Image 1: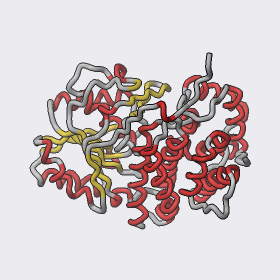
Image 2: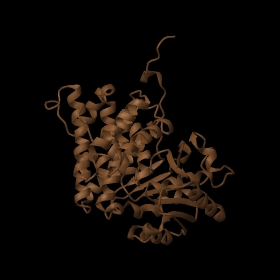
Image 3: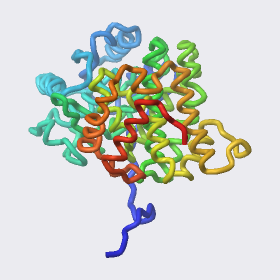
Image 4: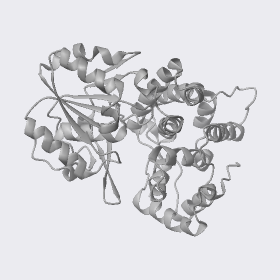
Length: 395
C-alpha cells in the first residue's frame, strides 16, 4: 500500500466567523442600535454575580433598558461550565419563550450562551451535540461580550463543557455568534494575573493554530497578527492595566486567536486539560505547555517556526537557520512567561515526578490531537511531560 502524505493541497478548508464584530473604545454603548435588526423586545442576559456588579454590566443593562428592551438576567456559577449549568440556562430561556441571548463574561459564560441559544427551542439535549457538526441549528439570536482578552470564545465555533471530570467538546458553526462586541474598557480592571493567563491563552490559540495540520492561508494571516499583537501589548497590559491602547490591541488579538481556533489546536491544549487536576486554570495550563509543545513540534514545523519567530520580533539577521528560528520562538515564549510570573516547570509548581506517567497516559488516551504536526507515541508524551517537569527547553 502506498504511503499517504499530508498534503495541504488535498484538503478543502472552511473558515467560520461571526456575522458581525463591533469593536472600539466604548463600543458597548452602541449595543441598542446593533440589536435593532433582531426585532425582539426581550434580552436574556447570561452573566455571573461578580460581573453583574461591575460598572460596564450596569451600564449595559441601563443602556438596553433606555433603548426599550426588557432585560432579564440569569446568573451562572463562577466556575468552569458544566452540562448542568447549560441546562439550567436553557430552562430559563424556555420559560421566557423568546428573546435575544447575550453572554457577558469570560469563556465559561460565552460557551454556555453559545450552546443554550442553539438548543433552547429544540428538543435536543446537550449530550446530543457533543462532537463535530452535531448542533442542528441556532434558534435564538446570540450576542457575546467578552470581559477578558484571551479565550476567543466570542468568535470560535467551539464550546467546552464539563461532565464530572470529563471535558465535552462541541464544535459547530451553529454556535457561532451573530454579533461580538469588543470593548477594551471592559477589560481595564482585570487584575495582572488574569491579564497574563488569558493573554497567554490567546497566544496559545494562535501559535497552536499555526502548527496545526489544518492551518491554511486565512488562518495563518489571522494567527500571525494575533501573535504580533500579543508580543507587543501583553506586557504593557500586565504592568499597566489602564494602558487603553494595549487593552484595545489585546481584545483584538484574543478575537483573532478565537478565529484561528477554527482550524483546531494541538498538543498544548491536551496538556493543559490534564493540569486541571492540580487546580491550574485553562489559560495558565496553556501558557505552561506552549513553549514545550513548540519545542516538541519544532523538528517538523521549521518553516512555520520561522514565521512565528518573525511575529515574535526576530530578524533574518539574528536568526538565519531553522534551529535558530525555532529556538528564538520557543525562548521568546519562555521569556514572556517569566515576565508574567508564570511557572516554567511542573516541578516549580510542586507537581511530584511520580504523577507524570499518569498525566501522560491521560493526555495520550483521552486527548488525542490528530491535527498535531508531529506524530507521537505514548513514550513521546511521557518524555514531553518529563521536560515539562524539569523545564528543559533547549533545542
